[in-house]
Length: 199
Image 1: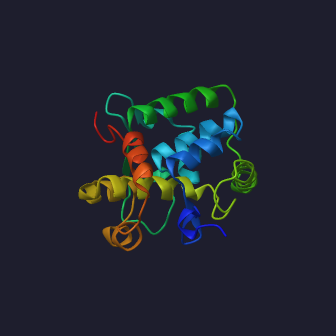
Image 2: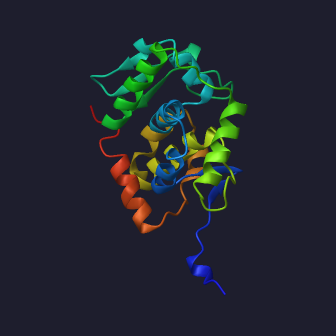
């Protein structure tokens, strides 16, 4: 009989997966370069899919010197938000992901539909043998993963994280203040987020 303490379970919140850094690396091994490019940008920015699509035509919103993207009102299409504009903070790796995304878009890379992404990501999760397969796998998971990592690694910056993600403090407190990660995952998370919001 398998020791229940050793069974690795998927982290799923409100039906959406929260990846660990190791799970994301495994997932990427089963994606095409185009999908890796798109997923990297989604994870590093925490943008919603409609925001990413809008940003793909407006590279001028990216500020390399300040390590951020300034999303104007026209990019933020979610009706229920207190933020009419939003600054998306980036790490150095996040800047590299954004710059590579722009290069790929300039070379005619197309952003797939949400339905296409769900199918591709689900297959990749199963092929990568992620815990519980494709449970909770969807494009939204990259946004939920980033905010979960930020809140676990730097809870003292909740106001900044909320503004970055376009969430109210109530949403942050309700959904992201009590999430546990294994010690080794937390170390990887801190490494991934090193330099976030620092220009």
